[in-house]
Image (cartoon, rainbow, N blue to C red; front, side, top):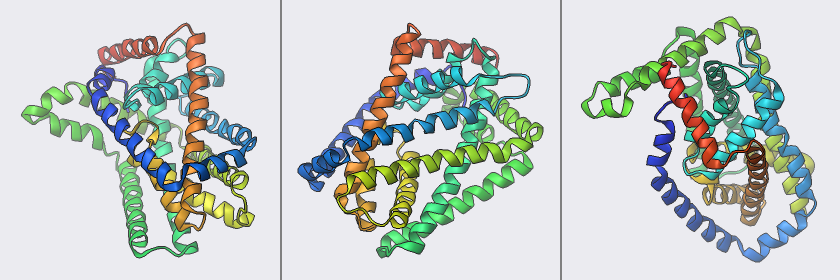
Length: 359
């Protein structure tokens, strides 16, 4: 993950694809809402009622936790205060939610919005390190959730095979990551160098390989200098996932007429949140995971004995929560005197500076 001159240009270039994915997601969303029953969904949303405020309160912890992890990923020479970091984080996430394939914009925007507080290179490196910790925590969380599902619930044969396949992939990813850190492999820069050696790849890669290599060097350097921070930062990322479990637990508790016993409901919430992480990873290119979240959640709540409608409603409540925090991010953006386009221009300016510095 790096801020690069082509980043925002790529967002514009792939915008049509983002629109197509969004349209397909809306079709899928409509189908699963119809299949689950709009009346039943509305009844569950009405039953949730003021419980949505509890969901919002719990969900507020999630950006705060990842922001805190981000501030812990700076080298000792630089410090980013939590207040400035959380504002940049919320604005960046809002841009990511509002724009097609917004992940290309959201991360550069976070770095651009704090460049008056810390050097751009330091902000980008800290974001890269935090994202790596986050990806490691996601792999561990998916492994734990999948194992819990296999051990605790009767699954159809196809889903059981898929679950074992997921465990195998996670173990492989964790092993490769461990070896890469120990031997200081630079897989991304090497991949870009390989693609850049192909005639058509030169135009795509450009000078990005050197900048990605610099980011990899900074990441390994952070690990060597601040090894004592490894477990505390990973613990913060774990708290991010546990807050998601609590959010699902509270949503289902208020929403269902006859919720399961607390321990059984907590186990179901743990599994459902791990499924949500898989959906986030696999369908990051779909704006707000419209449609795919409803499909995945509906399928797994049925398997867990909660019914398809509960999963579709849960996904809709998640989207309502995202809309609220996106609104907060936009409000912070307006307070800075910027529009969405203005924030994108700030990110583009930072990207040009990063490219000039061969970051």
